[in-house]
Length: 364
Image (cartoon, rainbow, N blue to C red):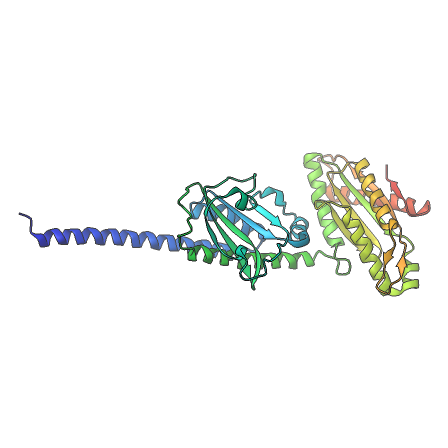
């Protein structure tokens, strides 16, 4: 007959072994989460961070899909990322939305974590058609300085993975880390962007356009896509300064830059080259398309009087020269080709001004 004490001792040993295994497993999970947090914190760029969120977080947390939704009024973040050559279209799990009404209210539902079954009507925006549709989800608000900046959305094909009764403390901790890191990397990207931005008009500066031009020339050589350049000059700008002062001249430059920018795509590049001159790079744009964009810009600037802060109105005009690069031989030097493209656009601009200004002239 088995001694009851021996049997009880054996059971206790078995239970202790299970507890030790569970403790070891929990320790490994916590260590994995700490390593994940350190990887997020160590991200120096936006691209490094979103790669960690979409790849490392998905794998480490055994999830089937992760998306990141950012509130981006007036496409500010998207423009910065585009200017820094980060193609957001490469990240279908990265979603941008406009500011929502009421989200500043601390009691707004969007500011609270939500766990449960996937609901198409509720969660379609967080999990668009381009990503996998989960069975259960955790929608975690990203809040910084009491402002909602977006949502980290976790999805699983396991319908029981996320339920309303599941504690969300660890998930909310993860979202807090991601929110801090997003704020940090976007601020870093903004600083880099400032170094490539004209402080008066807010468009890119000459340094950015010259660097971008070399990149696009290389891209044209590899893929054969057309690259067009515009040289734009504000007509009779000295008279503007003489008549309205330098403050009025600055306002005119800013207004003209804004009208040019409004006619461009996010993928295009606009830079102030100094004084009253601007350069535009039209990506994947053949010559006819570039001429059409240039004419739209000319009409936009000239079509409606500019309003100055003094209440005065001014009708401005621009002259535009357009040149296009269709193909490059592999033996051609990229820097030389870039200089020639701008030189051709500049020559066309010179002809536009010589022929009477307020016109578009082709380098062809």
